Image (cartoon, rainbow, N blue to C red; front, side, top):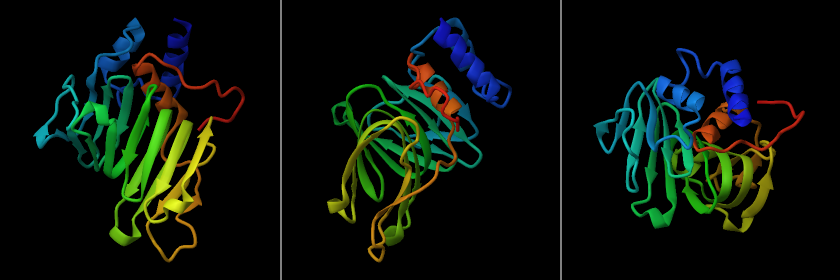
Length: 225
């Protein structure tokens, strides 16, 4: 109960519970303590398409599905113990078999939180193996000069750049400690270069974790994003 109150207070302060924020379905479920919230699409704003058909709130997302958001659109959805905030102009594909635990970010921007167990995220520039993780991805798929922004907000990752597998790294973070850009440009000295925290917030991570009955790490007095 106390964690739920903290979550609702944080989301309200961030403006995520107002008219422009999350849907009444999500707000009311959190207020009633109905978490983990029901699986599927819990927020649909603008044009959201699943497998070439317009999506509706409450629709389940299954292995093999492709989710596409249009301009000025957004989708918040839950699959098992994982939750996602998919921003506009984004295409995400999920592996056809639940056993694969595979997610492919084809284009755009997505914030994700994952439960326990190993999962794989595929982007144009890298293979990302995660475990109990919160992460944010921006995919700029431009062929030979593709670039991916990746922030491991917290958790652990095995990160292998496609163009330079010898640069593979395994590391853990607690609070956006190591954001980076991953490149496919062979003219660069290194494929992975440091970046700053962009376009995602702690309040959004708290929202997603709340939807699946979890809380983010205790960041203490660390400045919030």
